Amino acid sequence: MKISELARRSGVPKETIHYYIREGVLQKPRKVTKNVADYDAGYIEQIRIIKGLQDNYFLPLSVIKKIMRQRKKQSLSEQSSSQLLTEYFRPLDRFLATEITGKEAFRKATGLGREWLRNMEKWGVITPEIWKGRPVYSRDNVILAKLMVDMDRIGFGPKNGYKPEVLKHISDFMREYVRNSQREFYQSSLERLTSEELIEKGSKFTEIMSLFFYHLYHKLVREEYRRLLTSLEEETRDRGYEKGGVPKGGMTQRWGDEG
Image (cartoon, rainbow, N blue to C red; front, side, top):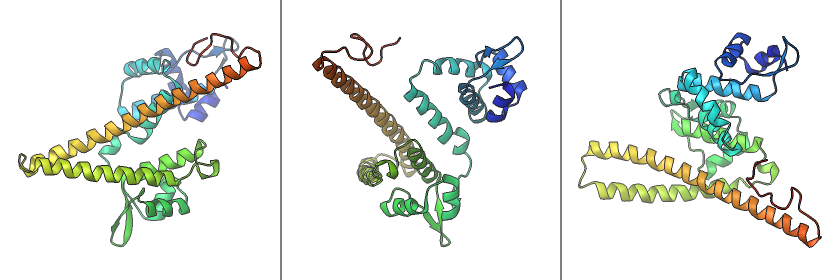
């Protein structure tokens, strides 16, 4: 696409795109003629990431340039993870009120269907507070609903065979664990901490455990994903041997090999 189309689709002026290229944040495009360059669809995503890092993290271009170079070395899984973290956990959101009042306003903000909102509330996955007779949804509830919509968008929704009840089981398990761990923490801390220290340390404990669960789950999923791919490749290779042929990709190619 030409730069005018790139500017329209990315929402960034042509002058800014040229500036990103001059500063080395964006790589130079392929030249079609002396005065015309061709930009592929990858530039749209790169520009959105750059703008997100500027607008949400207030980083200078010199730092963003290093991040973009490092991003090229990441796997698709790592790139997706970074993008989601940038979108859903923006630092500015931690200081701004992002609660939403009312079911319809919540659905409009998140895209979650009426039936699934009803189910998720019944299962305790989405848990609004009631204020003056109206449901009030926290930032965490908003993020959870958006993530469920994204799951559906990439092919892990009810219509694709994914059972939403799994989310209920995860929520029930996590709730039980949190209750037990919180009870244990506070009971063991009551005698040695003042009420102010208990509140402060309890808040830090909550955030640390939240990050622990996120990274533990992320690590386990990646490990299982790699194990599954390796197993599938071995099965494919074995079937090739049984038929007396050579598996597609050659004898020595394995998962993770380059080139």
